[in-house]
Amino acid sequence: MKKSLSLFHLIFYGTGMILGAGIYSVIGKAGGVAENGLWISFLLAALCASLTALSYAELATMFPKTGGEYIYVKNIFPQWPYLAMLCGSMMIFAGISTATTVAIAFSGYIQQFADIPEFVTAFCLLGVFTLVNILGIKESSWVNVVFTLIEISGLLIFVWVGLQSPKFGEALAEPRFDGAIISGAALVIFAYFGFENIVNLVEESKAPEKDLPKGIIISLVISTILYLLVSLTALALGSPEELSRSNAPLSDLTRNAASWIPRTLGAIALFSTANTVLISMISTSRIIFSMAREKDLPQVFSKLLKKRATPWMGALAVFALAIALLPSGGIEVVASASSFATMIAFTVINLALIYLRFKDPERKRPFKVPFTIGRLPLIPTFASFVSVALLFFFNREVYVLGAGVIVFVTLLYIFLRSRRSS
Picture: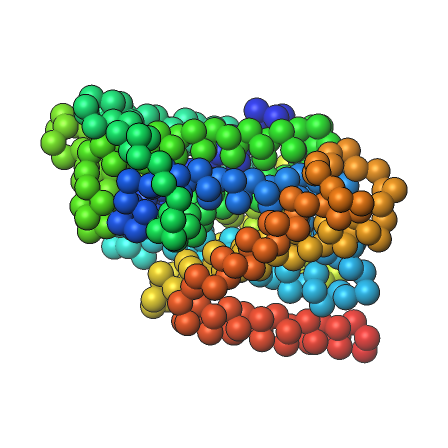
């Protein structure tokens, strides 16, 4: 694979995926729960996300191969090949369901400008970004840079409107910490997901040992600053009750501003959702490629385009699976199941890092998570508890769907192993 990505590109990949479409919807529900403590919920969620982000940074520099969670588990627990297969498959499911649900959200936003059937719009968006993915990582990265800058500009416009209000920053004078803040953090932490996708670009990074940890950390810092400003603006422009009732709070809260602002934010939401789809498809195609290369999926998916060195069969697989999910009913459940799968992966990754610290303490670590007692790393230990705790914040339907995915992966694993042994 071509080493085309600098630290600059990695930061934009991480920032673009974290910002994504989540902030446009989750802030309303979280504001209704945390009320004036919304900004503290975002800060707490950033802290929790950062704990696991450091674990990813350490493992990515130790195992600089495309495949992320799958590669780490496969190398750390070689005695349990099923665990690696399960972890990789869960992240494939998370990536594909994210791409599908956000493509549908894109279709909804575009209805403001053109009356096009949702399925047609989503199908075309997935198709175009499959071609961008196959075209090359360098080309994809510049599309992502442009889209991410547009995303950031939309949030800054919203903050600019908030700065005109005399209520901006009033929430800072009423700091508190209670159960509502924690519940709000449990909601908004999903708006920080995306940093983990950077590790799937490790083989296409020019200096992964140096740049990957920086890319993960800097993208989280940028996103946290923007989220804090947006949360303070939301509290200045509307009450917690107004936030909880709105499905599009950023647009609704700016209706009393200049007439061009709500429409502009609606247009920017198109780029935000599109960027999330693009990055999800790119990172997921890399996981499929890695699993096929390691012979845990059919090897046809490990094929690279000769001149561009892109995993074109993996990209086509992502496209096909995303299209298959488009007609799904209860798409909110599928989206939540994506977050559920990600939280399982976070739990496994933190536990894997702890295990490796005891199993192989002398192994070279270009980046090392700080603070230990003996061989026990404190930050990944705490992150493990946080990840497990967040697994209890889902609806029953999500657990049923998650169990269905696990059963499917188990049957696929048994089938592929039987074929290899025969």
